[in-house]
Image (tube, rainbow, N blue to C red; front, side):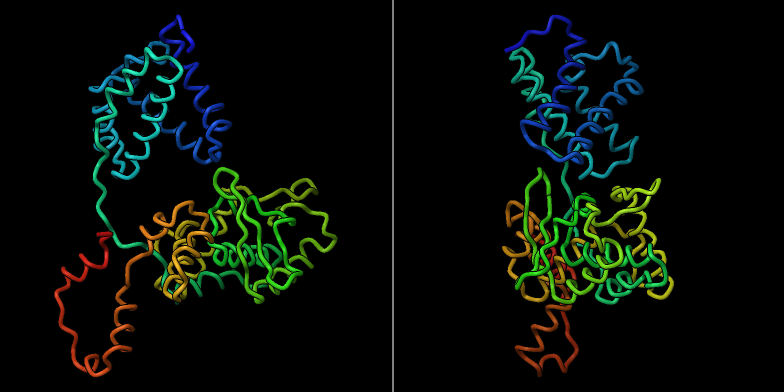
Length: 342
């Protein structure tokens, strides 16, 4: 176990080691996860500077007392106006850092043990958000085939939806990700922690991809699947660029479809795909594999409940006569059943 003589420098030394070595190489966390943990630590430093008037060169592990930690949570909630889920993510990062510091230097373990008993904030269970069938159709058809960029964007949206990808997974797609000339075509996706999964695609999407490749990669020399040209060279689309494509598609499709949500993002498309598969009768285990969830409980926590539409269809199949009469039910009890994991 290492000793650090300067109590202030050791915080910065261990913080950098935690972010740039431990998370990346030991835990094999994704760049997005590392970024989230870094933001959490920056939030705590911001709190120390603004709320407690502690300068950066004065920060040490004594600043991570139980009292300061509890005040930090209150500051996130009341000043930063973060929701409980976001606060829990940030406090999880702080706890992970303090656990790491304690493993590096046993004298620092007391700071982790002091805050460990503090419970996470309660998160109200809410129904999963996803786009309606009408909305997702309008969204996927937002871009027409009138320009080169529109044709690229249309293919990006189709593949993002069909594969249920995270936004970072979209940017990692390359020509080698595609396996089209086989009986059961599929796409190789690089997920969280560089974990690989293969997801099958429909023949219709294969046709779309072949058309796309004939225009955007006919010589099969360009590595990124989705790219933009800069200085005469193809560069893969960044996360920001993909987000702009999604926002623009939502803006266009909202003109003729009032059911497009106000905030459309990649994770919403991913949840919509999963819900569509679930409503089609696909097993949660299969959906979990398609989404790249390590544990099926992660998937079931999102999608293992019936929607009102599914309940009505089930009633029609089991008792047609009952559907002919007005359905009378206690809305509060139904909601409690539908949106509970109990």
